[in-house]
Length: 499
Image 1 (tube, helix red, strand yellow):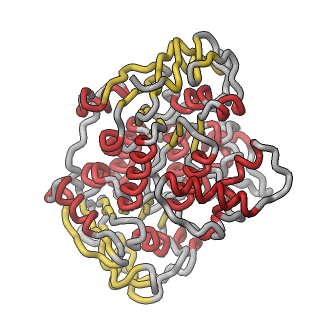
Image 2 (cartoon, one colour):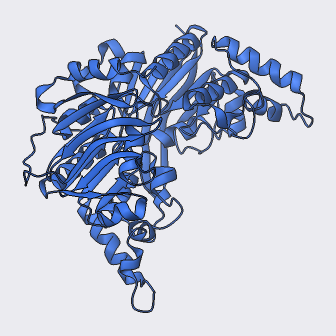
Image 3 (cartoon, rainbow, N blue to C red):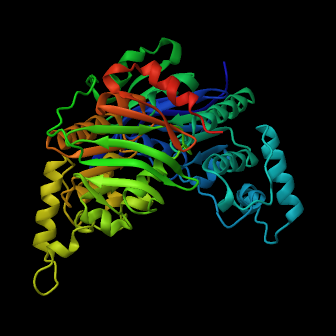
């Protein structure tokens, strides 16, 4: 039997009198990959922060490497080999690869003077353990997301990690990069290092994990080896009910397109792209990262205007020079990264919901009354089925699913005719995902033309009426979603890997 690196016994945790963890029992063994899954708000993050010493626990017992800790600190957790890699990787963009990897070791050993040779040695040894070669002098700002992740993993290894907790590690990776990450994880496992893998991508859970633990409403509801886990019951265990996904059949309200693009191009980003979307239709655009799909979305919203081709809205030829022009034409855009591009995280719910329509809410003196902000917020909270909170609550206090609803509401407040959604459910739990899909379908039923940018095949097939696949900046496949299977669409996307 492998060594037990972490053992939680009947762990409890409360915030403001609300129980968020209830009698949690969980163990992690050396050399295993444990997947921790659950919807947003289920208690995953709290559990991770207790293991890493960020939060104290209430009741129960916590053992790290066989030692009992009543109130572990982050430093004690690190000393016992626990490392957490969050979604932003917590790297320094202005420092080199070597500096980033050696940073924690230098701090831990209280090094006051920079020793470049020592930094290079630490970085080289860490990278060698995962069989990766990198330019140690490259600045992090110049690296891809996948390369930054490798730096974060190497930094953890440099601190003699025994357990690495990875929070949503594949969110922004291509399939090729995911495969490489999985190779690295298997290599770490072979060295006896354990991984806690947190993900909303359920197919990946079964691909990489040895054991699956599902947390719901603060309780571990099932904990089984992957070979014994009933695959068709994972969603049920996560939310307490089954979600049925069926082919989406739209009912366009008109024959004429709401938007039609004809051979539009932008140098180095996409070329000769043509499609149309009628009121009531949902078009999905997919392909690997780098295929041109996001660049296309940005051009439709005027962020990077097209350089050739034609765009028609309701039959009229238009030029979308900037975002202001796009909004005037009735186009809204939900960005891929809600945290840095979609939300004002430290501002209130009321401020976020009103941010795009602020001029419409001002009175004749140029002032927005709190009552107006509250009324507007309450309308969208109700409309989008959000958790009821005061309009003064900051966006940062909401779960990922509710944060995505805030971005949706912000743009729906502009009453768009065309809505472009880039990754509408990225990093969102299964229940919120289903509810957001229902909102999108309802928008189409009301006559909106919807364009979804996504690499989630289940999402594409159950939410869109048409799909186009891009490769090397142009369209290589078009079809109706009801006429293509999951396997066939997956084959098209995988064959569209950009060189």
